Image (cartoon, rainbow, N blue to C red):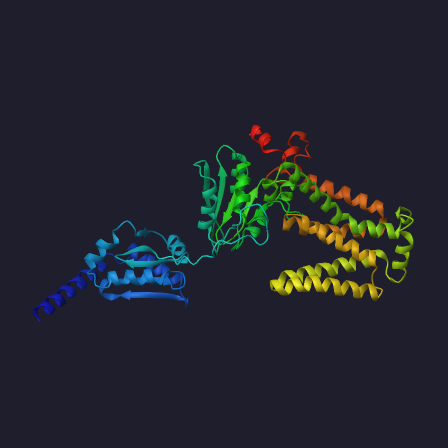
Length: 480
């Protein structure tokens, strides 16, 4: 009974001391932070709070962002504390004191609980850690390269790069973008390999982005690119850590964004989009042959359908005499001019491609294969198109899949429609005119002030073995 009375008197004394302290400093920083926090996070039904009146503290958190087991263990430790014991406990180095509303907001939204006590705010890090496991890349498949890909956790992505670049020369710079939904962006570079001018330029561009929120790396590079109206990608984006590391060693700057499984690399040229990690896992002669095949595939997907339209509309003299009767018979049942026939089939192919990408994997494959065969055969029987055009469009589609970069492949498919229209109006002259416009456009593009067609424009023949073809590693080592 006496013990209970003494304990009660002690609690009353502590409460009176706390009230007196509050009266002495009614506008203290702790109260101000708590008021700012409750004002800024009002009308949030998913915000949880734990109160301990006897300890004069409140803990705010989002239950789905923290590790509940760790949080419950923390509560079991402080539940029986006295205010003096709590003060000593919070003075441990593992609890960071937050001094402003900005740091409090960032902490609670990244998986921490915020404890308000003694006119201070403490960061209690109980992050859940339920990140997606590392898995192979689905958009950049390789046979001989590594089989891991970036995930949405920037910490894990940094770890994947650090494990490959075990050197203190790998430097990182942390930036923040977004006015409402803030995101951290990390710039990575190899000291001594990357250009400091390029580094300062990319930092300036990222910091100049003022928007409510950017949710993915592929959105960010569109904000900081020099030519927003060009269909061609200007920043190399990848979800493969081995590709990113290769670009870093090549003197480029890489960027990682929080909650995005992609990295961007800069400065890059058109020929960087034609590389694959498979190129570096094979003998250089084999890799060079495959790389040249890719350049031929670009010409096929750009010009094959356009040449069909040009030849069948204006230039029948270019058709071999043995093939002419077959072509005339195939075209005799088609009521449309070749340009409309080609545009119809190409557009239908794009619809099938998009449907296959949006549907579930197994259903998408079925739609792509069965839909292409059934619709193509039905179109020929109905007299809407010719057999030869079906073969030409299929060859163009297959050639577009040879391009390693999905972004560049999409750009080329769009440009292909322009060549078809030009060939329908002016025949071969239209194709030549279109090629001139395309080359001029590519030559005028830059990425971080670096020419897009380097080393062709401007011309550096000695670098051909590192871009147009894949030279021996020994020669590249001698260059380095």
